[in-house]
Length: 286
Image (cartoon, rainbow, N blue to C red; front, side, top):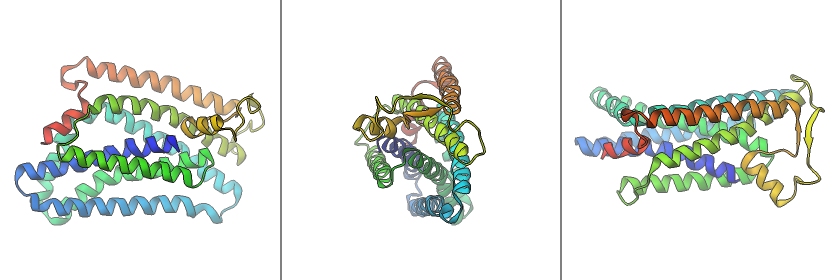
């Protein structure tokens, strides 16, 4: 639940900032009456994202166990790829996000009603589809039912509230440190989702080594204990981990984390990509 709260908060705030940028730019340049087109696009993105989440949840239910595990494991690995790409993309391109969106809004406002709707739908929908896929994969990894949805819903609600307060000028936060550390936590969570995806493929017989355990600490950390549930919820930690899961986790988390912080340090050393990151993009829209 805690991990899904973080996912909902982080990804929801990214989407909320996109909406804030779009609305702030329209207010600044004059055609504020076009804001309703932004909201139509946002509503379409939300509906598509919810439909995608429902398809992921209920779609494979009529398949065999092996087919469900193959689909689940494959989509979990794809979700890890999307989230990893998004974390690095935000670290690299956040500063130019505002300018890119403003350019698209200018082009769309001069084109047609549908064009502006499409800009908002695509900008928010990209975050929504990624969030739906990663939440679904994380929920399967923890083996919980309604708790991940509650955690994600709370995270999204907090993100929407923060976006609203930022838009009204009530809330001024340093977004660069927020995205820096939540990005690092997302990499750890993604490592757990990757390991669980590997486990799914092992259960389906696609990958070997289902019964070759790297460690079994279930007597020290019982899965049903509060700390076992907490570790599972935050890091997708499994007390019984196979060698292949452990190798995949280490092979993903350590190099990706090192590259992530190296990329952040490289960006901070360049004046054109200052540590203000996404914060700069938000401020420039007002």
